[in-house]
Amino acid sequence: MSQEYPSILLEKAVNEFSKLPGIGRKTATRLVLHLLRKSDEEVEGFSNAIVRLKHEAKYCKECHSISDTDICPICANPSRDHSLICVVENIQDVMAVENTMQFRGVYHVLGGVISPMDGVSPSDLQIESLVSRVASGEVKEIILALSSTMEGDTTNFYIYRKLIQYDVKLSVIARGISVGDELEYADEITLGRSIVNRTPFTGKTF
Image: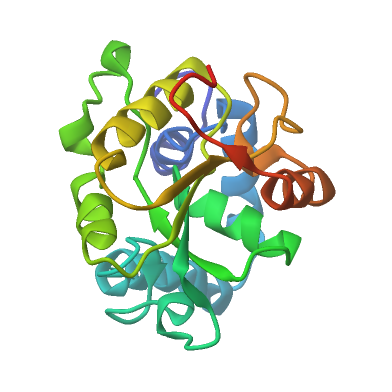
């Protein structure tokens, strides 16, 4: 037990919470002490929700977004435009775009962006499944809604080269999103306008 914590149990709990992204040891300590003050039922409900999420959550077989079922509600919705696919980096981006209420198509979650520095190659992402969706002939437009970073632009270009042989329109969200910004942190109005005012992607945008 370190001198910083009066309890080994407390220290171990803080260590686990501090492994979460954006959570330092001070914040982790506050969260653990907060849970310690809660009733047994509340803490058990919290832990059960995490365990159930880990064991029971699925990924949509169509778009790879998180879902309770094999096909997510968006992909299963017949009122959505299935000929229009918005390509995003992660599930948070799906939530961000949905919150704009400006998009009525469907999604494709890549699971990241190409980043050789981080050891992420095209084979680590859901790019081939995107190609398969386009190859089916039902898709008319792909919106590349990746973050405006070097990695995002590299991924856009790679996807462009994979899809150029198909009769599908490729567009990229308008640069209302500042260069270097992560999509999930953009405000809803700016992100919504960026979707609506998307521009054709020619492979030379960046």
